[in-house]
Image 1: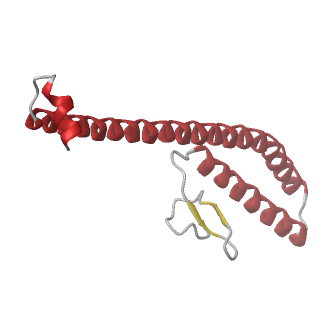
Image 2: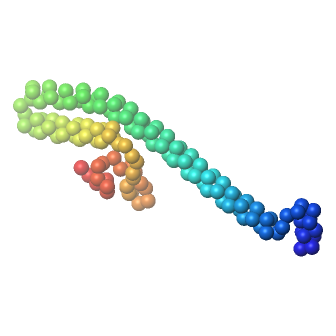
Image 3: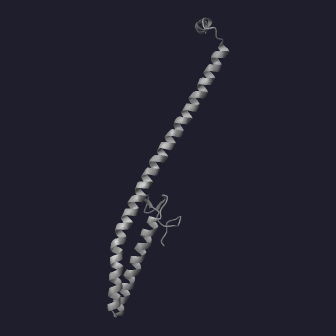
Length: 139
């Protein structure tokens, strides 16, 4: 303590002034740490937003590409059903048409995604929840 006091004598400062300066420095360090944490959080949110945006753009491109062949399949099913009077074939075409419309509904839901959420799939595996329901169940 004597060495510290000796150093203080030449400066004209009191120990109370040093303690105030130390307290001010500690406050400033806390403020800087909080600012740094805020910047890290903002950076992480920006990276998350960029990844989400890229995923949504990819989903949109995939939907567009899937919808093109669906249009052709739908038209062919329609033409085949016009020419065919066989009940069994008509039933099969109707089932195919229903499934094509189901795929179309799925692509429309994908195109409408604005945020990401996931759901349990098998065991510990999770998959993206593209349905409008919180549990991601069947339509």
